[in-house]
Length: 256
Ligand code: ZN
Ligand code: FE
Image (cartoon, rainbow, N blue to C red; front, side):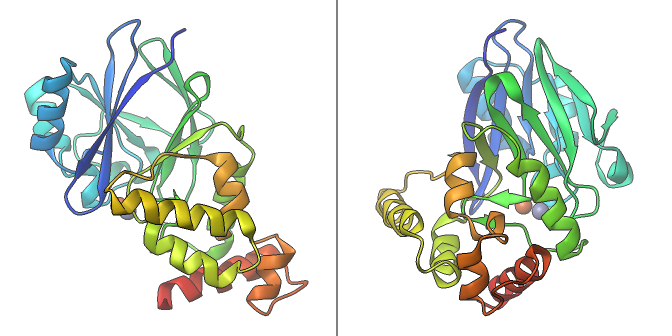
């Protein structure tokens, strides 16, 4: 099986929509299409026909293009079972442990509640690609609109176990602001300092910092490192359990 071809489309202020095409069958998914026009145009420019929409969660900047793209292409809309009532035009409901085939490419589905109660992630193992929506960002994580720190830490735990080479396709370019915050809660982390400098360099040239690899996130993203003694100590919680540290780090980010 060949790996997916993945095309990144920046839309609106800071959203990323992805087109993921299985080269064997031509099946092409738009992942979290915020907007129909930009996404249809990008697909046309590539000569790709959208056959699927994969939604991670119900927020407007992830499903805003659903109905118009479906009307234009007749595509199949896949989304979280737990949130089926909030996913416009949903055809196929998926949840934790399910597999979903995009042509010849197979995604494993994880329930990753926290940002919203029905958030899911799509992991294409053979393509080393994880579509994670607003659960994990480069150097950050989603706000807890509908979940608890405990839920989010558990969701992040599912992601932490994937191979380090996995590319993390998150849905926003928040990395530079996230880096500024991360340095305040993980100040002794040399890998983080180096990455923050690299991010400043990339953003100065308007280059996307997404996707990153999971290995990079494990080494530098404080929200994946709530069980790291250095992070716990930096937020005054040495020896505390990871959920407590995670809650503190998330709370600080909300106020940053
Ligand atoms: Zn969201
Ligand atoms: Fe979003």
